[in-house]
Length: 68
Length: 478
Image (cartoon, rainbow over all chains, first blue to last red; front, side, top):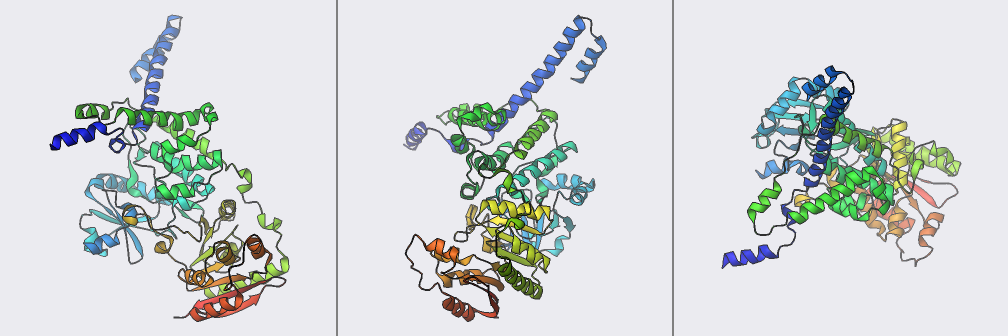
């Protein structure tokens, strides 16, 4: 009986806000920045590789890759 | 145990790493085992002393646990003593410029810590206090070692406690105080989001810190609703994120700093900066002189360590009191623009003076957890001398508070003071009365003198020339 009541209560709960850490959105937002920063770093390497393909300095790219 | 808990400042009870308590008029902080390593690292590297010397952190020194009652030190590894700030104030008692100053201070402090390998575990505005116009950080235990790639855990808190309240005034012209005092943790993200104008979409800062955060928050709430499947909830709760480069972390703080620095109240703008306002004042010189001399003599006699100026306006009489021997003045006023001017004056003239927002008919109560987390004005401190110039008629006629109750209330804050009685015939009282019935038979000077004399000794009184005002100095009988 108790479990039925529990199920009824649970299934009628709409937004259980109390269970949500209020800072999650902020963390997701910063995660976005982190991903963008990571993507830009990767793009940087590819950009260097393209530059190298067109006669850039090979040395620089290797340095960059070591830093990553 | 009840003795120990009564010593603990309820504002610090949430922190498991230590708590604050007051004993023999001194402020102490316990440091428990969970904060031991962080504290030792900070102390042994001399970093705490460096922060204190540079004025970032409130004066702190380690004391022997035998100096304090055993009941409060039982779980503590260390006990430190903090210098007492003249009056603890809360962000809902700050004017716009004070909150803005605290926000910029918090960001600067955080940026400094990050540059030197440290981080802050939160971003609560209650950790910033003011000594005169200078902000100081009071929570030693919020300072932690920075771990590479970590996130700004206090971002949402910073937004709700600093950014949104400032934006509310800056965009909408609504002072933050009432909303903040109602919620205590600032202005909630999803509520603030609802008052944003549509044009906010065009601001990158708004888009990032408010709109996107609110949308994500909404999404998290919608997705995270409990639907009977606990495994699903667990799965949602776990988020794996890429490390945040320190450069991006700092950029967030610097971006906010730049944005907040440019914010001004919508209804005021640049006029909130102190620029020799007293020269533009139109008071009659002779009557002002009489009033100033009266106050100066009384302050010289009493030499108060702490003076409260009720209805301080831009701080003319606060500054005068400081000049004549008061050590520290806290001004109170309901006028937001006057507050900002008074605080700007304290900064420009380097005065030990701060002006706080208050509605005299509804001063800050004790509230929060257990109705004791944030203290009421009366519970936080009192003054040696109080001055109330051109003030009580606002309460008596403007707010229907009986005169005897006003006098009792004033005497509860300080044993000595100056009150200016403004008669009904005075032009300013006439303005208050012009559109209403005069229901104040007891608001007259005879009753004022009779009631005040019963409670205190009237030391001196002087009629202000060419006016319907008399100024009284009193001392409560022991």
